Length: 194
Image (tube, rainbow, N blue to C red; front, side):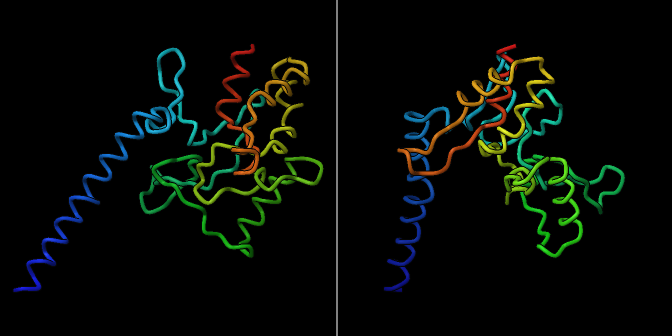
């Protein structure tokens, strides 16, 4: 009993401290100092939430820059024991779990490489991310799409390139992370430009 009481007190104390007090304090600090990030980096248009800067969306039309391929799935509405492709399904965040020798993966990558055009093709143009929800693409991937987007929108390529440059995020402090382009923000900037 002399050991049980201090052990139980420590468990209850640390549960209250680390399970309740710390998360509440961190949530309070985050909402005070970083409200956009704490709120999910939601993007609004005309007073309606249209997405999050943290979760990719499935843009397929020629007028829009396309994101990284997504391997997320959803239950097949016809047969609940099967799944169907459901790009950027946040309720099913996962990679396909297909290995490098998987025929379906090899065929999908070959198809994407052929559609992407001349080599070299950036990896993020043909391979899905681990989560399947990646909202960003590399500047190299975006540059390869400029001609298609400009033609579909009837805009000069240089204007599309300028909007792309304005929406390219540089590494933090110049060395933390990589250059990246948030596809949703870029496509919204294109829509706003006409």
